[in-house]
Amino acid sequence: MSADAIYQVTKTLRLRLEQVAGAGKVFVGPLDDPDADGAALILFLYRIVPNPSLRNREHRVASNASPPVVVFNNSLPLDLYYLVTVGTTSGTNEEMLLKVLGSAMQALQLDPELTGPDLGYEAVHVSLEALTTEETGRIWALFPTANYRTSVVYLASPAWIDPLQPEAVAVPVVKDSLDVGAGATLTME
Image 1 (cartoon, rainbow, N blue to C red):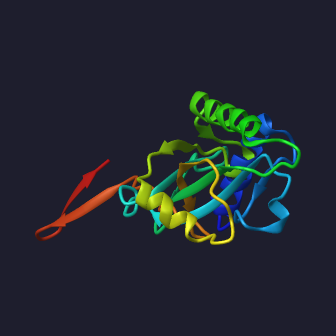
Image 2: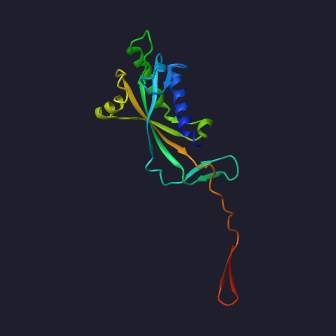
Image 3: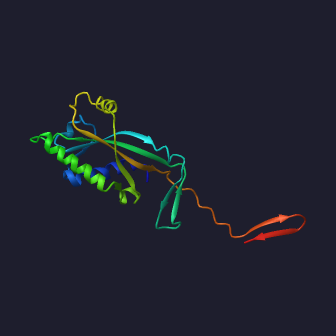
């Protein structure tokens, strides 16, 4: 993925949620944003951290070109934490929006892989995360003017930010020779 990996994962997750909530019914941004009014669900990226198990690994990407596998060193694998919250659609109570939230959770559980051309056909796994009451309180403290609404947290991982260019591929060794002693040569093929 490129430098816009965070944007592309967020957009792909929003589109997946809109399949359940309806087009234009998922707002991406903070809960207390005035533009969130009328949304069935609110998707808020509240935490970005490096993936600890992939941090020092190379990122191998399959391609249709030559070479068939492109290797990126110094890629940044990220874990993206999203708060998915019941929105504030006017004229409906929270009960109807809880159905939308449940349907969204069901859809993500049944197909937890985000992929497609926007993600370079790589898979980003989405999984439900358990939060303690203290962690939930810290997140909601970010929005002192917003009333608490039912929320869940999803982790999307890995979102790779790759360097602009992959590592240069070395020419394979076809013939190797080693000079041994006075005038003797050992050749291996």
